[in-house]
Length: 513
Image (cartoon, rainbow, N blue to C red; front, side, top):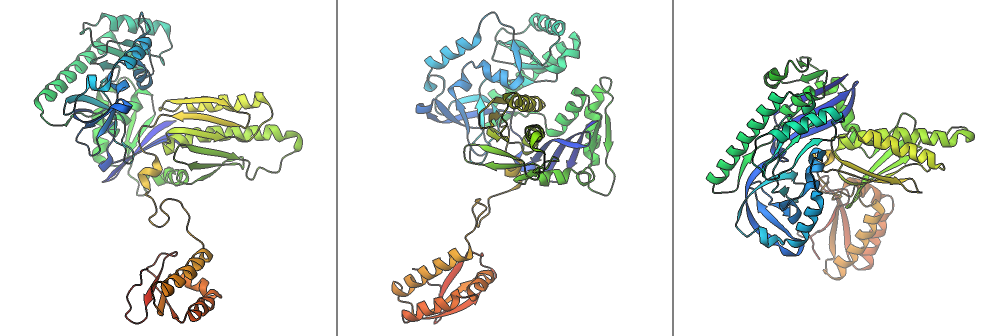
């Protein structure tokens, strides 16, 4: 059974895809950080960077968007990635793309203060603005309209040769401007010719409206907004034949039923309103899965565990045997393979739930047999096929390392929920009491010798003071006395456990040296 749960809050919508009761995918969308991918804007060029052949464009969404020369000229690879399509052309368009990229300069196609029509292809993350393209695509349910690209193609996911040939004939026969193209999406396999014609006309009307607004609007402005998470949930249920859509807000439940009405004959989807007092995500154990996915360590049923970590350049996943220590020596290799196979499955699921993107290194437990290494690698690839984000997986090295990339669409789950700790600045570490005690000794000598302060009070957190009580306090008093100074002590709960201050015992003012 496959179902989608929609949890609606005032400032947040959470989308959980459950497969046989287990969380398969998760999307968390905050209202102040609405998804921008697919949105079309009228933008203004603010800065051209000749050295990297790129430009910054104001799209009235805070941080300026970023566009590269390859996003401006013809770039077939981007459409292949976005829609997983197969072109039906008589020539190799990629060779044309490469030639154009080499010859054109950014200032030949863009000027400062120029108005441009652009589309967001990658969400802004942190201080980085959105990644933009000038090659617009308007997606419908069955078709994608390419207003300024002449390509006509069919999704690779449609494997039936007869269906592919039928769709190619239909889109070739459409009476459209020569500079416009069409892509048949996976759902078009079951669509009639009339349904495709109607949608093509609707997409053309939408494009004409976008162009009218572009010409009328003087400033940077949003021209077209991609469908929201609620509509995407309904369409996903219909297209992928899910069994149920469960919503815990009555107004949204009513809205979902209206969205579903035109497609009721295609698939008998159950749209239900969740009425129980227990929160829906708790009832279906989604909250526990979210909490689990925010941890570094994930235990596997075999007794092994995964350890997720992040550096500036990449995410790493370490597979460990953990509690799986008690096995026969003769069966060691097969036991390690079983742990690695389970790990591959859980890694693919965690990457979806956490929404990890970019470069990922998976360190599997070492296996002697190349055959077993291939088994684990192929299982990982099979599991990653269920991911909507585009993934590229390389082979397994002799050390059991697998390099892979996953398309980055929006911020990770941890970036959405967490912010860096103001005390450890995101390191997850604080200094030991011993380290702070050594610093205090050093600082005390500096304050007395350089600051000429001979009546001092040390103010610190109670935990640090408790550590100093065990012996260091008397030592610090003796250090002060050897320098002809008097040292007193005071605790203050408001201080951070690593923080301390020296205050004058005479006027109670903070001493700074």
